[in-house]
Image (cartoon, rainbow, N blue to C red; front, side):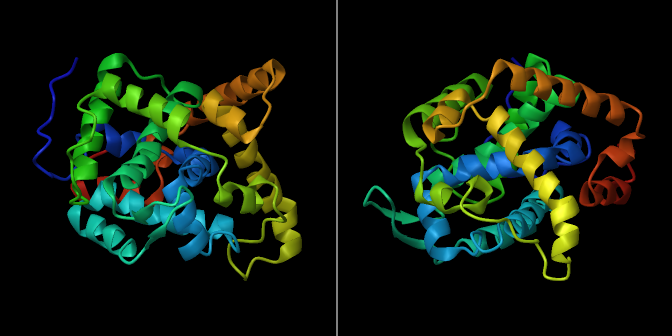
Length: 279
């Protein structure tokens, strides 16, 4: 196992981190609906979405707006984390289990963080260069530094990657539900998915946006943990898995032909440039 990073020091990540390269990769965007689905299956997050979010009126726009600030935390550190934490103040009530909740409670907050972390592992397995055990541990230890930027309790954060896997399997198997947020979401069949911004003409969105959203939903269905997929009543055949693997190989091949800088989203690319480091 790789050397553990200091869990008490909320030092920002930098260009020497594996996270800067992996989380900044454009292929992460293939898992936006995947991460959103896993988050919305959490009873507390579901209730917060139902009571405090416009995600149901504009699901794609909401996912895009949510992703940017999280990316900023990885590349800008504590100031960006303080802004994200501020977005969650005042979001509280009674969840689907009849229990009081607050969006800044560490349990649902860490689950959302866990989905962003796990995006890197899933992308590596299906669409990018695979990760060895040492790099999986390194990414996890870096994620602890990333999460510490929010200033929440670190008491229940798993200490290492194997412990994180046990936490992940427990949450997927014992905590996640077919929530009200999932049942109401247009991304899961509760109506048409509108354009993310009003200036996109609907015919153009139907022609291009619709297929892209359909791809994201298909990927989410195939890449979800089997227990989560079963809880939602979604099927996934061996034939679809073969199609997914072929798609993944095609994506991996295309990205190998791109210069490293062009595999990154704009914010990560600017961060590397500002640091004077080539990706």
